[in-house]
Image 1 (tube, helix red, strand yellow):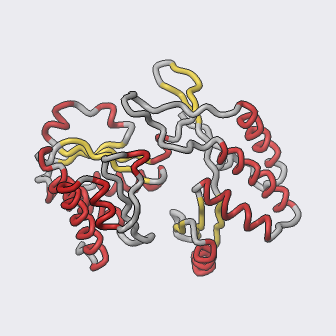
Image 2 (spheres, one colour; image 1 turned 30 degrees about the horizontal axis):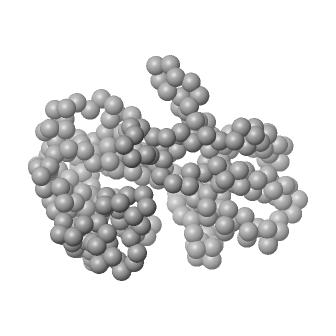
Image 3 (spheres, one colour; image 1 turned 30 degrees about the vertical axis):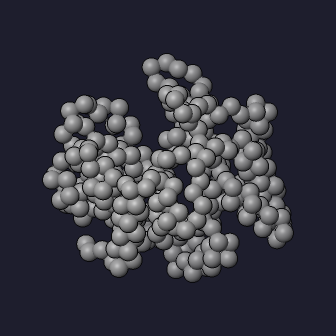
Length: 299
């Protein structure tokens, strides 16, 4: 697989930033290359940048090249060994990424093997608990994890395996695959969300999982453009759940300097109780009774 022109430009842009970073530090490098104010509140002098590539633009492919650039330019002293944390937005994409990077015949894995002389090991976040010192000393160890793995809001109990729960919320529209243009229009109009094909490729799905965008874009939209009948009742309950989850959302990164591990996010007990009530109240409204994606318990 050859890099397209926009992918090459993306890699070159980051390469220039990394060189500037080595000379002048994170703040100066960001301002110099992006031309915007650098947010020092959370990360200080820890480099923090975002590379944006549209859906279908080959983000995984570009990321494989960027791993090499980051290590060659900014982490040269690591001698192409150590750990890379690779985060993806969902468990589905995590599974997809693991499949690509574990397959030595896949072009994504081929890039990494070529760059790092076949000394690459791939782990899921669950498998990472078994990484040994010699793995890190002799290989580049890449840990693939979804962001969901860190959305743990409160510990329920601790035996041999910690147990946690998390709350998430989503807005989704599913249509036949030949109606994709409709969802593209909706996405462009709302200026947020993502579009993906279902596994059987017979349907296309528009979805938004960002709680802030749901509260500030989707809820106001349907308050203005009122739904009727069961859809209205469904929306009222759903929007209440959005509000509850939003106000209990962390307002800053959930880690404290100098403290090991992640800090707990303590919810209002009344909010937790109300979410469960909403879950039960929505059941009669739905034609299919199942555990909604916006109300999930995991371990």
